[in-house]
Length: 395
Figure 1: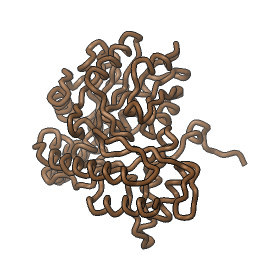
Figure 2: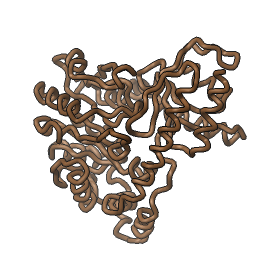
Figure 3: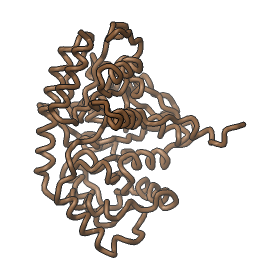
Figure 4: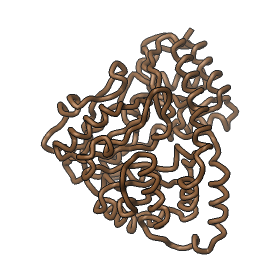
């Protein structure tokens, strides 16, 4: 019988990171001591003052009803203030639309700007959902490869080599998922000027803006390259900065016409983001940053630990991540591992899950076979124990 599922939906795959996390959870539920390196979220609870604001909002009848599809006016205004404060980008509430997580902002932006046949430049390794969201908009992803030797960053020359007359958009991410790469200010500026010169839209994902370490420094593309601003959409959320992944509040900051278009789309799809979550996000943006800095300090410690331990595993090559919550090591395939000889990183991830009882995400999910993504957003003891199991298995 012919499948009733549309070709558009049948063509997309499940999120690999979600799948790995679910499988690790199932094994733990069955009694296996699996340590998960796959999850892309902070392991800290949401700060108490944010939870208290949500509890207060849940008891307020004003939060029990529909609100504007583009977001609560007070939250849109707070996002504008936060963007000026943290990124230096001057904007107002008319530039902001509140979405169901950053993923909703990426989806809405692509739906608003892309037509069938348009091409989108996506540097690899990329976050797993970018190509699928581009495809759902009817457009085509053109991967722009980077390597461990380049620090997992692409240059203007790389982008220019991939550009065609159909290029409509660049998806730019710094700090990066899955690599932890952070572009320097001059690199961000050069890429922004290149995009502006060719009239290319830039969707810049700034969700990890506060999670940078060492000498690395976050910089916002429309600030470093003002000429790109009129064709730039900034995506962000409370998820990573405030340990609020499950609250599902993100936003985009862009030209008013784009923000309004995404708002119209949401009026016929999701409607408003849950009001209690929006009011919790408001408390996050207007509240103290001390819990954020404490969390970043812990991630910095774990980052250094993971980097050192990965260097001790035979067949592993790794760059020290400068941002986000991930390391992305290259691995030598064809090596014996516990009586097996994995020939792909998918097989290696399976081997590590079954024999070392650690869950990692294969690079194929990020358009980069031959690598693995490991999150350091887990407890210090689990991090050391898990990587120790891999080292012992590798001999």
